[in-house]
Image (cartoon, rainbow, N blue to C red; front, top):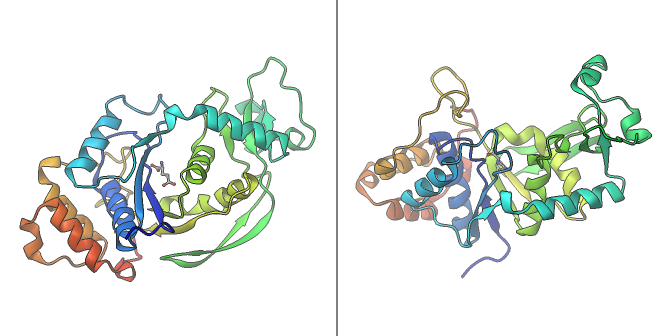
Length: 290
Ligand code: GLU
């Protein structure tokens, strides 16, 4: 029976094809959801066409397919959701949770990388100047519980960190869109890489400003290459070979500390995932990044 109280998702930004690090995240979120009879969705966070090669989305979706990672609902594309993000921005501006910031890079640099207070305290009319919209954080000692890492404590410093939610170039920012869609898709559980851990406290404030309770969070250690760098497009992580899906899945489960039996290597992706859902042990995940 499906568990309506668990809705998870995998939400890649299509900056390149799926690599081993993103597969590990996808598998962890999929298996967590399935092990709790929950639903699992895929959302393509294609907000920035300048950083996203047009073929990447197709490559990612084909790879997920080849690895047997099928979602319960049609894939959502953030590039088709601009109206929802604009509505959220209008709402945040109206309720005083966001403000327009026409500061140039030079002005910000002259102010030690921070935006001058007056942008926030006494909104300037941007006039003809292009402006960004920033979310107005409040100072907070934020305490929250990570499902894997345990109690978390983060200092949110208003003013210093106020994230841009609409960029000057007109692109909606990740920080806003991820929250708007997690609310809209009724996501209860976010499983993602611990490189996003630092953003969680800020995102919780955005959830609340939009009138929603934040989901539960589970951050898994990021996979490092031999040089100790996070596997990513910037560190030239190679694309996954979809023809070796069973081997890739086996390695992903191994990286997640699940100790899959060697005999599983000769199985199909469906069989490997079924084994993983049955034997999933969240506490076996090694907390030191590897
Ligand atoms: N789109 C983000 C990324 O690829 C992940 C968003 C999230 O899981 O919160 O880094």
